[in-house]
Image 1: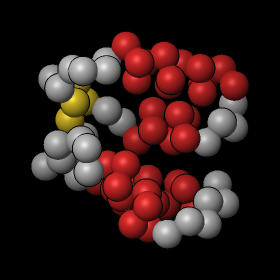
Image 2 (image 1 turned 180 degrees about the vertical axis):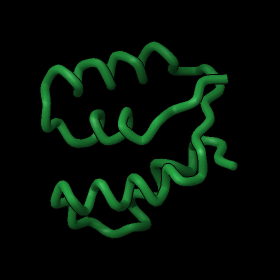
Image 3 (image 1 turned 30 degrees about the horizontal axis):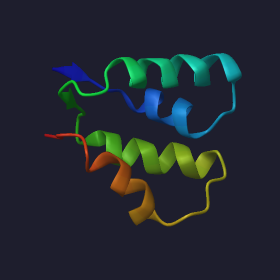
Length: 72
C-alpha cells in the first residue's frame, strides 16, 4: 500500500511550480492501479491549502478527490 501526502495532490492540482507539478503527475501515473492510502487529515489539509492558493470552488468538489483514497 502506498501512502499519499496532500502535497502530491496539491502539486498535481495547482500547477504553481512546473517541476513539482511534473513530479506529482509522474508519481500519480506511476502508482496508478496500486492500492493507495491517505490519512483522514488529508481532507482538512487539501481544503486549507486550496483556500490559501485562491481556489474558490466548493468544499464538496475538493472532497470528492479524496473519496477515492482509503482514509482512516
